[in-house]
Image (cartoon, rainbow, N blue to C red; front, side, top):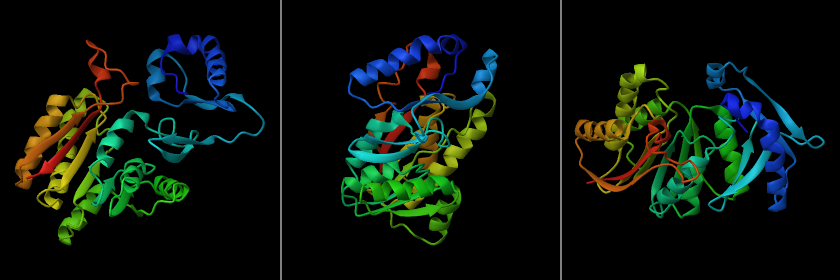
Length: 275
């Protein structure tokens, strides 16, 4: 769990035990509750950062295995990003997998391999997962083995990887997935973030053949849907390609978008075809 507001933090003893009871009544095995309260957002409401067990049975490790879309994942709730897994892309992974069969897929910023593994399970001809984090790549390899799926893994900066492929005239991938971390967490730096998204998406569009697919996302609410769409049009112009919109998506419905609360519409996900 990660608690970000003072009101919830003050009432966690009223919330967590009944939640454990409800999950157990639903047939879930709850061996511990680990608090990942290491977000700087807590400091805005005068709370300290810190991680640790709220409840733990025996020597329960801070790792678990979950299943999403039929894919199993090792999740490190102590050391992984946020709480170890990004649940908001569940249906976007399914949408990407639906067009992956028979394709050569390059999954950039793979984290623990979720898009890559969904595509591999859907029958992609070849899948390569790339991430700058060594620990993320190791977890991706573990998750591939857990599901008996064969994927290639590359550790490195995604900008460098795509630039090298362009320099080497390596256009073997006919499906590229871009799911980078938020390039901006404030309104002041949204201009620089747009330039980062522009460079990344332009590289991908230049690498894809006619008929190839680009699945691209932004998880920053400061990068509004209009800004993101405008960036994609600029990237297409810079790459000298035209785009067909296949799907425009948002986060999973358990991350609701509240009308009048713009920061809740944070995840943009586009599937585009190069034409």
